[in-house]
Length: 121
View 1 (cartoon, rainbow, N blue to C red):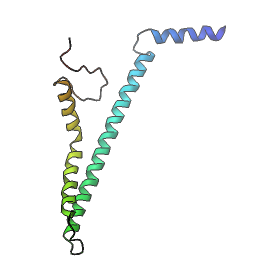
View 2 (view 1 turned 30 degrees about the vertical axis):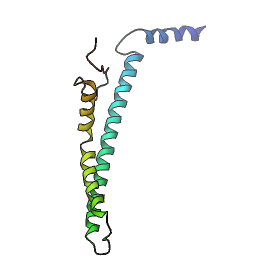
View 3 (view 1 turned 45 degrees about the horizontal axis):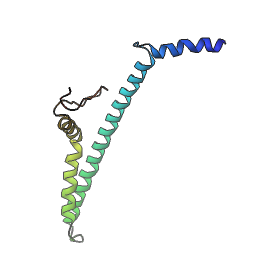
């Protein structure tokens, strides 16, 4: 019976809105997860941009070597440089896509919140 008496206040705490309750802790965890995911995504895009830039420059350099005169090296180099630019500006593209999908009512931030699409009503 003692254990039931101790569990009762913990369950009651989950049902009451407060700034230190389970709901606030879940919101904080969701916000931290969203922020971490954003940082990891940005890091991955910058890493991919670096790899594409180095690979594109290497392919362009290889295309000028006499033993590598087959077709496609210049195209591969240009594609690598274009992809590097797209990956480096990935955050801007994501923000523009969110604004386009929501009709201009969306902004991408590190704060978790409710997103409403359309004019509402």
